[in-house]
Length: 356
Image (cartoon, rainbow, N blue to C red; front, side):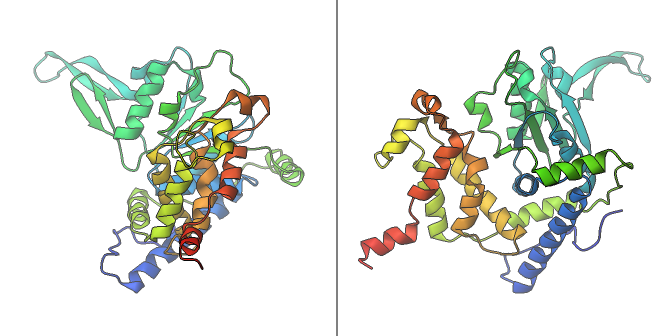
């Protein structure tokens, strides 16, 4: 049974109806609040991770979860799938996994009517709404590429036939940052397919105590589904229609361009510590992420604070540090934090030009 409170019909915001805008925001805020409440029954803490997952889902994006084993990454993904009333598949990536193991393959079968043999496509686990790619860096590049192509194109090609994936299609991949032996790290070009690179960190002392109490007692509570596929698609349409002021667009552009050491306006800090910066897709994800975050916080307009809030998960896998940065222990997150301090707001620039 789906939780009431949001219509599954597409919401038309083109009519400039304030009532419909309010309905859309109220429905999304209510749904996200209920989801966070239900997730909190199973997952302790990790509020930022949960919000980033919801933002990526609302933006039709994909998310890479990076964290050491035992931080409930898999449990979080399976919990979200239960709340969304969507089909869910988990693939444990291994070095011997082939592309056909995840996409599906043609098999030869007898036709009961004609008695002749014919090929029939058997879909693989990729044909689900939510796909958990567990330890994606443990499988060879050929299989990684098959998954990443499906993430971008939303379809799978087997032989001469193309098969559409279900909508919505959401990939959550996990990666262990400490075990690199026998792994196949994702190249930067493939990492760029993920909207967010989300860091799953250790819990606080209080959260860890709560984890010990919850997980060593009774069975976990049953969860109530909140949204179905039609409702999610409707919410995704709402996110795309959130208005963005020109200065917010400019700030997202300036932030992405500030990461590129080859640009004339690049700071000495960037030129020293970055060898490669983010491309235009980073700016697109900054804007879309800001739109979704604004709605989750009950607003139908974006601000530069929304851009700042999603800057780290959007940019951390799209910039490459230099040897100098690595030798000094400066991470991509350190660089992004400094950029958020250095990049001025467009309104400040306009005021300075006007002599205000």
